Image (tube, rainbow, N blue to C red; front, top):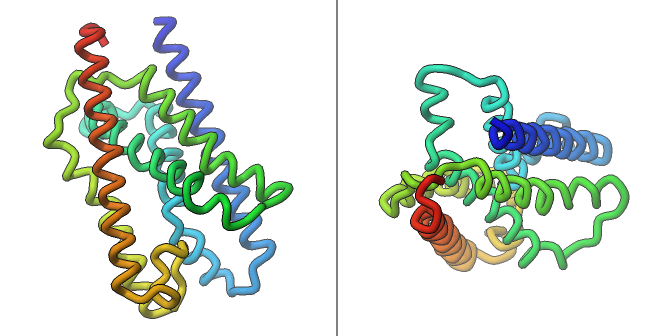
Length: 213
């Protein structure tokens, strides 16, 4: 019971932090943008960071609401939580390894960046370690986890071809051309596979080390 209470508090913390950071980032974009509101919203939701933090926030909200039936069964599957852990881990890795050096935000923007790219990823990884059963994780689940980033990439390239806006420099077709941008996407796919394999492998190892978990 005590473990369940601690896990619930952790989920609540993740959810509050994620929603706070998302809403504050949207406010800052609307405050400083020179684009129409509609275009600003489209660009806001074009960022993998935003979409994935929204995914974390919605997942946490659903857990706190305690749904029933098929939705509960889906949310409680270890594969669901692990897939989200992979997605939000990629957020942290790409930002801190590739994007952090490209700009130096200050004030509220600095806070938002740290929460979206460091705080939420670390908190969700902690939740995965502390609150997710790993006994049902299987290697064959990994391909299904790639659907979300694949659909995201397709949408970004399609919209970019019409608007000229690409949310990240490493997929900017205007600056890099299609061959380089697509190759960078392939490299990112490899990153998703490696991170997914790391979570499944770690989960299976933890299960053998602690069969009750």
